[in-house]
Image (tube, rainbow, N blue to C red; front, side, top):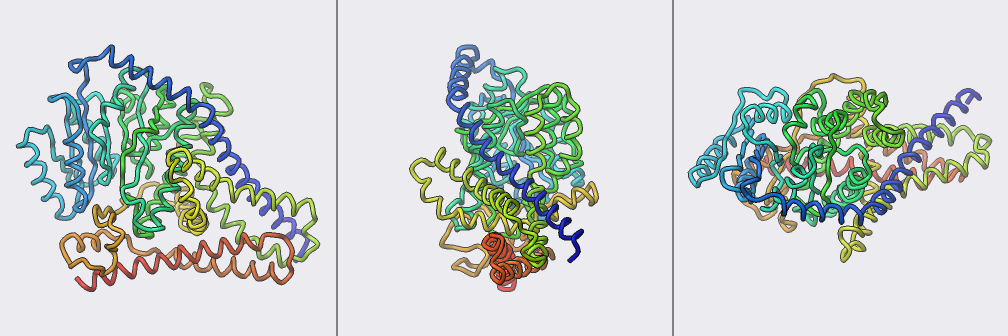
Length: 522
């Protein structure tokens, strides 16, 4: 190998390690920001709620529109509408919109439910469109035109808000005239369904229990998470409304509203349970959509953020790290691909200072997310956090194995077409909450309408799984080369990467096969 290529490989590899190191440092920054502001923010929120109760009576409360964007949700629609109608708000001031873009027969069942609830005295509408233009953003935009509320509470189909949800969110909008939206924390209805869902829940908790409050409480850009939140109509309109030129219309709108002078609030103690994907192919589809949408939003809005004179350097830096976080995954792919050529280039290239620097950065980057996840468990599950430790290795392996899947999303945002179909994550309802009954295998369930919907809603396996297998073999080759020369302590990390790619690749096939067998049985 020529000196040019040796220098090239070392430069790229070192640059990737530095990128991961920066994102790793930010995990600790988030924990510090959370810790320093937590007590003061709790006291502030409590005082605000006390002032609200003194200033506002029932007759002063504004009309609220609850928007429920649904698409082929036969398995969860009953539960969703029941929770929406149970929300505690003055009679005559609560309007519910079922924004139904379904293309299967579930819309007829939904129409029957809506009619039944309307006869019971609920102000609920079943709004159908002739097409899915704009997907979720288009449905929300269309619903706004027909709504009479000053504020909009939004829930995805698998979310089950508590009855006091509006009582605990709307006061912040009424007491703070520049508050554009309030976001609640996601909970997990099927957290203990399997080790796979338990690992997912820990990853989500890291975002909602640490990152979101750290951003909200320290004046940084906060993202609305698409559901379990309430928006001020004026903030939506001044930000330019719901737009569908990214796959993360929620992230896009929340940043545009803050660029327009609004800010968001996050309530970590208000939990809205939701369903975690039990099938890894559905989970990968969700992650790919989030990865692509985040980078699309970064391309669209980061220039405006950076050029703005209204934000300081730290806030701009955090916005960059926030919107570009999914760049971690193609960075991981590059590092894994470059490891084998580096090992094959010989010992001379690995001078001691370089090795020590790279090892330090990689170890730091590897453990930083786990530290944040464990911190989140200690904060919100003080009696059970130690039990979460055993799931951290699986979460780490999943994170590594998803690098291919999420890199596809990132590259699609950079080089792909701007508009594409919004692929929603299938919801299984109660079938996703019973550990003893696997809804994706024969189990003890008889073939039924619900099981047929599980098959119909499945996300098929993607061709990228073949590249996951390639990456697994490549990482293994690098590991064995490390064993051969026993130089450069990257070997164990390569083995972790190989395990991650293998886990995601194998599980993708296994979950897809179980659904296919269920389909054959029906």
